[in-house]
Image 1 (cartoon, rainbow, N blue to C red):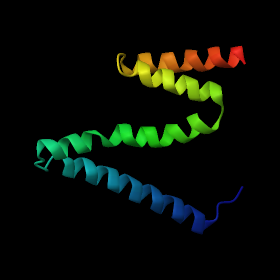
Image 2 (image 1 turned 135 degrees about the horizontal axis):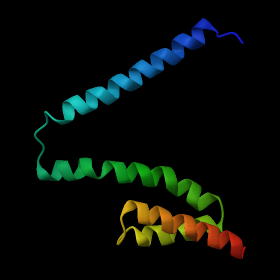
Image 3 (image 1 turned 30 degrees about the vertical axis):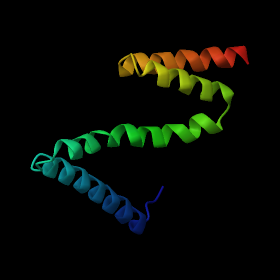
Image 4 (image 1 turned 90 degrees about the vertical axis):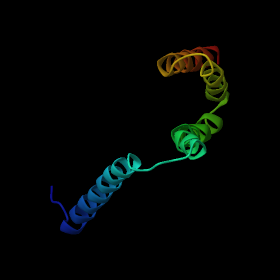
Length: 99
């Protein structure tokens, strides 16, 4: 197997840029003095990204996945993350068995 030098440089460049942006974000986040409203907005980013990633596949794959996502969303109001994941997995398995 041979590795094309151009592709290798592209992969290494992308890895370096990705790592640099993550490290820069961590380094800068501690130095910012944010208002409570701005802090709340920053705290809302991870769940928003998670929903943006999960929602299309939950809504486009079938009724079992859509129903399980709805049940997991309801469970998320009361349970910690591990419990929500367990509820979602059990719900998908149950709905697929019913199908």
